Image 1 (cartoon, helix red, strand yellow):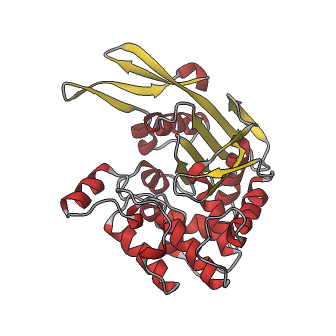
Image 2 (cartoon, rainbow, N blue to C red; image 1 turned 135 degrees about the horizontal axis):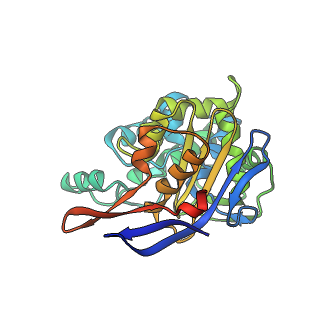
Length: 314
């Protein structure tokens, strides 16, 4: 299904196709386009569920560090400092991380990192907060740390149970995510359902603890200038997380969930499509208006935009 148009100087030069699903507070599908009931990889949109799996087994984090444990962070200084703080709670240093060496994912942060004389390092890989929390969970439970990424490890088994409980369906396939940890396949509808559950979670639950951490510290869950942080700051009660390959999940405080997957994995269409879905559901804010188009440049000035494909959201 076409979800977004690429329009340059008034000419439609391409499209982004994908799938969208909206679930009601009871978890049933209320609206969808595309394929929403087949296995897919949520990628980093899984991280809030992974955090719950760790909290169930004693992960001693809250607030900004819990937000970082569920983050795909930008590699800013406060992110790196936070990862080191989590590791110190486990009496470990960054050499224990099994994230692959990388540059920060945010362009400006990466450039500053390189200008400061750094190369690729594990601690600035965007999943290092999650991996530090995984190590701390292992130390808390006297589980081995050398094999913490193995799907058979007690940590990963605990995470799988949490994902299945929250999504309301069984994991159908296990693969290796970009960070080296297991990634668990569920349906797009299951992903939407889980985010509705998080957003409406009752105070005192672990799901509410994760949601509250994200909403209080959205820059720790993403980055200072990221669109996800801007959306959580703007819309009361909204909870969201992006994933690689243009996956995006949002929960609204009334318990509705939204999940999208752009088929070609292009990030530029992700926020555009989510903005269109939010508008369709009656959620409006100037930040949503700003995110409803991705500018296209020509000669250094905007000459077009990636914008919602109107027939998909009628």
